[in-house]
Image 1 (tube, rainbow, N blue to C red):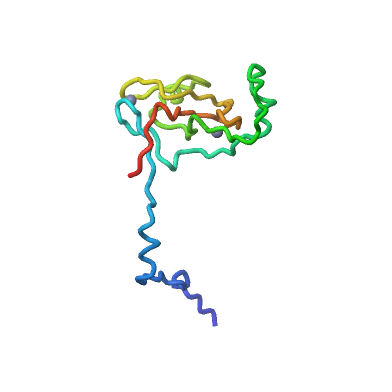
Image 2 (cartoon, rainbow, N blue to C red):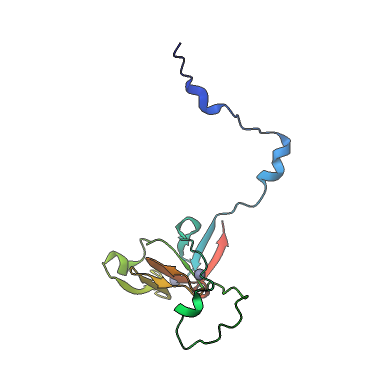
Length: 142
Ligand SMILES: [Zn+2]
Ligand SMILES: [Zn+2]
């Protein structure tokens, strides 16, 4: 009566047909981020914290100086990525609340972190924020 089928998990067996070949070859590269100067890997795609682009509200929260928020159509580009706290971030390990992030290899400044959060160039708040400037890192697939 109580025939619990352990092999239940394999009900939908993988359809390894020739038809699937095309789908398999779609580039599913793992993106990694390297220090532009010394090529040290500073983050991988799985470390990246995705945030919603802050549109609209940006005009209010942005510094008063920039009163050029007439064109609401243009979506601001994120000039940096946000990642999880990483091992190489020494000030994080040392317990700082906010500090600049330097490459552990060449000491190039890669970004900034703040446990209390920071605002991305797109206007979105990221909290906590471990920001790496895109201009300081290389994005490449592995
Ligand atoms: Zn952004
Ligand atoms: Zn470096």
